[in-house]
Image: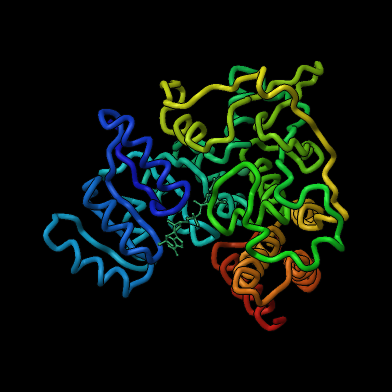
Amino acid sequence: MKNLIILGSTGSIGTQVLEIVDAYPEKLSVTALAAGSNVNMLEEQIRKYHPAYAVLYDEKAAEDLKVRVKDLPVKVLGGMDGLLQAAALKEGDVVLTAVVGMIGIRPTIEAIKAGKDIALANKETLVTAGHLIMPMIKEYGVSLLPVDSEHSAIFQSLNGEPKKRMKKILLTASGGPFRGMKRQELADKTAKEALQHPNWSMGKKITIDSATMVNKGLEVMEAGWLFDAKPEQIQVVVHPQSIIHSMVEYEDGAVMAQLGLPDMKLPIQYALFYPDRLPMNMPGIDFFRLGQITFEEPDLETFKGLQLAYEAFRAGGSMPTVFNAANEKAVSLFLQEKLTFLEIAELIGEAMEKHKLIPSPTLSQILETEAWCYELIESRC
Ligand code: NDP
Ligand code: MG
């Protein structure tokens, strides 16, 4: 039995993790559930999965939850302290980090220190604090399994192959809802339009990130940390059907790929049961119906966010934090209709230009840089 601590249980990834728990109740149990403020859904989840602990980051919402579930033996915690406590619970084996944004950094670090294996969906954590987290994974002897579909595909494509013979990673991208459009066509795109992803159903922030292609930029940096790859070894390939989830090219020219229907349950389940592959109640790919799959070069002129991500990756140090934090703030303002679609990447670029690079930032410098970015972006609208 694996005991799960699920951070972000009420989100798109979190709820799909719980569907896998439903499918394998004899193999998976829930030790703790954590979310931001969604009291109603967390209460439902507590009544169904009986975790020993439940956390809401929003302290008021946590107080409300405490009252609602006082008939149950669950311990309710609030705030960052609650997240940190939950991440380190001795009863838990695996911490599945599916919170959105760099709020995931501290709980992930706490979980590693407590010897937990990490199933990582929360890419912002690795992008901003990869230089702190990757050495800790080794030091504490825990495993870090990717949940992001592309990284799961790369991980699977590396399985059993000599990693030192990896030439490059081919990171696939659907291109999002605005694929093929030019800059001027994007000027008046609304949040509603940007939220219409053609292939994947996901949380709002990552859906906007897919429309700007910032998500792919974050994934390039995530792949850099996970697979020890340099920027020039990671090539983004637009593949609108989202059937190939990514590929690895070897020195002899052979390319290994992982294919599947666009459904996050597959990479989530793979991370939970690795190295096993358990049955999944999902149709396979019908290649005859699919007919063809296609590939395109990314348009870096139009989707400047991807270009800026490579620049942040090359600069290293605190620059990926600036890229990520500026994006987090700008996306939240775009969702509130306070910024236009194109301003998201423009403001990321502006923040990167104004930032004075810190070569190897400590955790507190990362958090200070985040706060600096938030202030800068807020002052611009
Ligand atoms: P959602 O917005 O759907 O869910 C986010 C989750 O995080 C919710 O449970 C939310 O709780 C919780 N949360 C938000 N703020 C806090 C906080 N301050 N403290 C604790 N919990 C918080 O996001 P997704 O599930 O789409 O994405 C989660 C992560 O996984 C992201 O990093 C994303 O990039 C990554 N990812 C997602 C994929 C997908 O298919 N969705 C694919 C690959 C990666 P509440 O509901 O209470 O707000
Ligand atoms: Mg992805």
